[in-house]
Structure formats: C-alpha cells, structure tokens
Amino acid sequence: MSIQEPSIPAFAVVGRPNKGKSSIVATLARDDSVHIAAKAGSTRMMRRFPMRIDGETLYELVDTPGIQRARSVLAWLQAHNDNAASRPDTVRAFLDAHAEDPQYQHECQALAPIMDGAGIIYVVDGSCPFGADYEAEMEILRWTGRPSLALINPIDSTDYVQEWTTGLGQYFQTVRAFDAHRAEHRKQLELLELFGHLDPEWQQPLKRAVEILEADRRAQHEGAAYLVCDLILEALTYSARQKLPEGAPEDPVKAILFKQYVHHLGASERRCRRQVEELFYYTDLQTSEERLALESDDLFNQENWYLWGLSKRQLLFAATSAGGVVGGGAGVVIDGATGGLTGGLGTLISGVGGALAARSQVKKHADDIAQWKVSGIPSGGTELAYGPSRNANFPFVVMGRAMQHHRLISQRTHAVRETLKLDDPALEWLSDKERRKLARAFDDIRNDRKADQRRVELAQMLGEWCLAVDSA
Image (tube, rainbow, N blue to C red; front, side, top):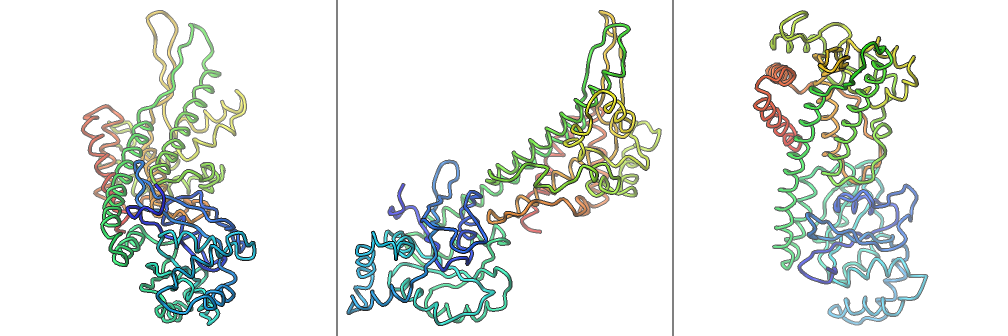
C-alpha cells in the first residue's frame, strides 16, 4: 500500500544533516538495515521503511535527506504567496517548479512525502544550541499544514534540551526529547499514541498499531524463553557417541567425540542467538563471536566461567540443595574448576587442530564438562560416549549467557551499531530460592526424573524473567 492511503499512517523524518534522523527511523521502524553513518549528509535519497507485523504494514517511516537551503526555499514561498490559506498549495507549486532542479534536490525529497500525506517528525540535536537560523526550515514545515511533532535527539549531551523545547514549541504541536539509541519500548509506543491525537484520521489505526506491537512484544519475549529453554535442555542431555570395533584404540575416537561435542553445543548456542535476534527483527548483526566481543582466552578463564553462571558460593548452596554435593547421590561435580564451559564451545574447535591437540584438550577439560561412558554392544565391540554434562554450573552458564544476550537484544534499539558485550554478571538478579529451584530442575532433567514437568516449569520461569526485562 502507498503512503497516500489514510489507513496507513506515514511519518516523514526531516531536519538538517547529521542530527540523527536515520537513527530515529531505524528505531521507530525497527529496521537495522537503515544506513547510519557519522558523516553528515549520508542520507542522499528519500527511502521508505514500513513497520510490518505478520505481513501487515502498521505504519511507515520516511527517511529524508537533510534540509540545507531553507532560507532560499522560504524566500521563494513568500514571494509566490499572498495568503495563509494557500500556503500548502504554494509548497506544492515549489515542488512542481523545482522537481528537476539539482540545487533543491534534498529539499524536494524531504517535502514530497509530506505533501503526499505524511505527518512530520522534525529532528534536532539537543547537544547543540538553538539558533534563529533553524526557524526558516520550521516555518516551511508549518506551511505544509500537516500534523507535526518535534523530537530533540541528545546526540552527545542534554545541555540544550530545555532551550530547544521552548523554541520548538512555537512551531510544533508536540515536542519531546527522544534518544534514538536508548528509547525503551514504551517510549516508542508513546510517540505513536501522540500522533494519533494530532490527526483524527490516524487515531484508530495507530491505537490498533500500539495494541498489535504490545502483543508482538509479549510474543517476542515468550518465544525467546522457549528458545533458551530448548538450549538448556540440549546442554543437559546431549552426548556424542561412536561405536568401536573390538580392539580398536579409544584415544583417537575420544578426541573426535570431544570435538564433536563442543562443536554441536557451540552451534546450538549460536543458532539460539540468531533465532532470538530474528524474533526482535535483527537481521544485520555481525557474526556471533565478533558481536559478543569475546576472546578465546577469556572463555577458558575460571573468572569468566563464574561471570556467566554462579559464583562458587552460589553454586555450592544451590547444588547442595539439589543433592549435588561432592560424591553425592546426584553425581554432580563441584570443585574449584567447575565453572561451566559452554562459553568456550563455539571457539574451542579452532584451537583443536588435529588428534594430538584434541587429545590434550580432552584430558584437560573432560572432567570439567562431562564424563566418558564405555558400554558393550551385543554384536561385539563397544560404544564410546561423551556426555551428557555432569557439571553443576554448566546449565547456569548456558542460561546466563543466553539470558544476558536476550536482555541486550530486547533492550537494544535498531539505531545502535555497537557490538554486544557480555561483561556483566549474568545471573546476579536470581534469588537464592530461584537458584535452588533451578538446580533441582536441572538435576531432574539431567537424570530423567520428572523431566516433562521440569521442562514446563523451566519454560515458565524463563518466560517470566524475559517479560520482566521491560519493567526492570
């Protein structure tokens, strides 16, 4: 559908170059394909970004080039108009007269969607002082007669926000401070609600858009919770297996199985991240290891293991409540080196180059992650298996990394281009009661006790925690 159709509200984001217009578009359209650059004038052509949910366009953002010749345009308009009632027609006449004029290319591209029916979102930088030279472009926008609001984007600071609020209030019906890089979900919806009050034709469509976006947000969190739950279950139950003929040496096969084990779970973690990102409409993020800003050395550092999972005290307290003391009936390993290792799964393979190197890694880390099993088979020979994990902290580390990734993704706006960083304690927000409950659930799933019931409980807990991100 085109933006001329009144059933689909459209907003032209206009202003001077390098004031954050494209960042506003990316955030409100939830589209990380919007080009954002530090260089002024990076947007050279008008481009439309529809906000779609399940194939339905709810509204549309129009990214426009920066206005650079406002005084000249305003002078032309004033010279060709003799009454306020005909001002919108005079703006149209300017567009017709200069459609092929390269001197006014950017101004025409900024004004055209407005005169086709789009509302106006005028963007300024709250870290720069207000100046009278801005008034020409604001007056031009007022001549269009379209509903409008102004956003003060504090790119570097909020030093001049109040000054801009006073100045903009003389030209625009609504003025708001809006940080495109940090605006939480609720604040984005508030802008849509505001526009609904500015244009009666858009009130119902935008009210419906807000309702759909709120329901979609809940579905995103719930979907992420199920993905994380499946990842934890995979980490708790997966084993790499290989049948061996009678008399075949075990060491080379152990190296292969260990490599297969870490590769499989590393791939599972990366797949989970990609799926969570897709739920929140991220399609253009960097590769997993780059965007997580993790070094391979860190992944095998005990300090970082506890950063993503539980501390030694928390781990001992939680695992003891589940019967997982050293040598206890649950068979869970707890010692100074059991921090959980899923963080290293994605990069370990690159450091295991050949049977000898792989065998040394097996000896070094096998007891920390899982245990070996050798069982006979009726047709002769044996089956060698590595896993499932018996490490007490392992599922907590998997969960910690996944939940921190979910939090960062769900709170990130589509204007942000920096890499994600997992450099804060991932599970500090858990209470002792929740840690104990998780430890029991992990132990039951690991040992196939009440496994279905525990899976449901785990999914419910994760769902509540994911939804709580928006109210934190």
